[in-house]
Amino acid sequence: MARPIVHDHAVHQRLLEVTAELVDREGPARVTLRDVAAAANTSTTAIYSLFGGKAQLLTAAVDDGFRSFGESQRDASKDGLLGLGRAYRGWALEHPALYRLMFSGALAAYIDCSPTPEVASASMAPLVEAVTSAQQAGRLKQDNPQTVAMAIWGQVHGLVSLELAQMNEPGTDWAAIYEAALEGVTRAWAA
Image 1 (cartoon, rainbow, N blue to C red):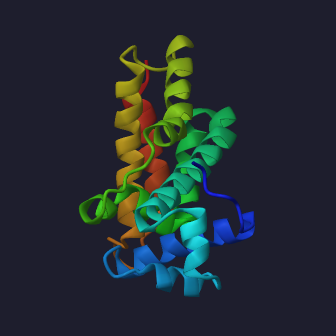
Image 2: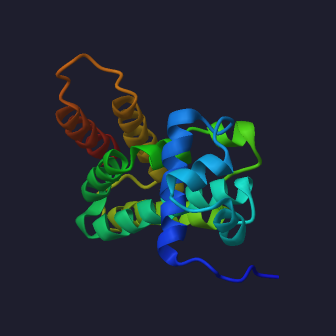
């Protein structure tokens, strides 16, 4: 049976955002629902009413991240593979806490919490579609589109993760490094 909606969308969204920030800063084991409620200026009752409990709140926060990321990728898909790559980095830099929450694996080690498979897969669909389109146009090597997409994703994901972890010398030009990597990926998979 679905829970009745007694709190508005703004509270729902604020709880998701605060959860990502707190988990990113404190770690999932140290964050309590009371902490989340206080930081969101609401009550634990709102969390239980909207989500059911901590595991469901964490899953909802991860799913919300993948939905937002997927929207960003769909918006960038008109600009092809380079546009998707640039949008990937842009989204991650705008949402570093969500990015780390989605991809760090820290939640799964602590609590039964993983993204809803359909939501996570949908966020990567624009990349697979762009690979398929580029292959059909003869611009990319013919290989399994899913394999090519995962290889490309690994490249951009690795660089963005290093940038967010601040694994660099002061003054590192991450934008230039990222553009060089995108160009390298393009050359590596060119037909």
